[in-house]
Image (cartoon, rainbow, N blue to C red; front, side, top):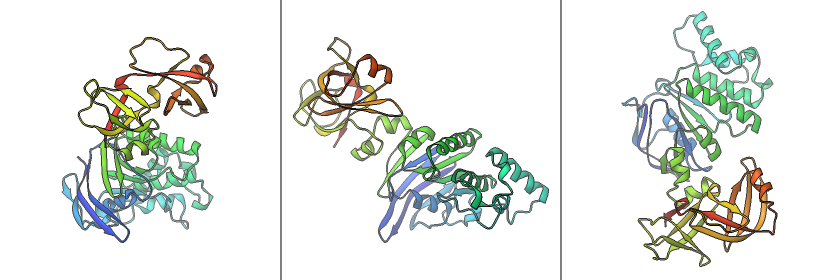
Length: 351
């Protein structure tokens, strides 16, 4: 374990961190996922030592660093707005992090060269920040932190202000840095960013951690209505278990009875069905799917991951299909269509 937070609390005039606890293991790419104002950045600043908690403790490799000076924490912090020095060259910005260390000039140059090569910015070392793009500035900020050889790298929304092409490039760079052994704690509001980068995810809301686990655990099994909506679960409905077949039927809005595996709790709660788990066909057919409904296509929406098909089957269901399926089924708005999904594809979340 490289970093551990134990019951960190801090009160602000209009916000508070409340008993925040989690662990980051050596080699993790740990994502702190939450909406704006959830407390993500405040938590990073607390870990870095810019903000001091009122209670709780921060441990680095088992040692309490709660009240340790910032420069002694072996932590690198990259801000969303880069925070590079405009009057310095790229070389001077990166080398600034070595200020105060007893290093020979040649050793300092070698370190700057190595991290610049790592981040593909060797050709920018003589440039001023005002001449750089957003992606280049972010790489300079990363280099300035990595040259310190931190035990853990803290990233505050590092991709938020970048366009899609630069985002993709920087994601690849972050994956490379992680594969080279760097432990990373990255805060974001973007669940797709969390999925593409994270090995572990903690969801924060209103200053508290409300769910933690691997990306698959969090995104496939959200533990609350907030998490399900936040991570983009679109087939998410209030439901009531009917008691039929040992509680293996849920009624959605008194309109649709959905079969599911018998949940341990109930009777009120929410039904979650991933759009990827819905199968469409032009006719009803016998299959292992226990849920089969006829509906009318309301809307067809092309997207990056596939095509979203919105269907009225008493409730609005959204199926994600491939372009090939769209063509094969000859789908169009207003057409009747059958929807199929297994009982195991239905997740019940107690209210």
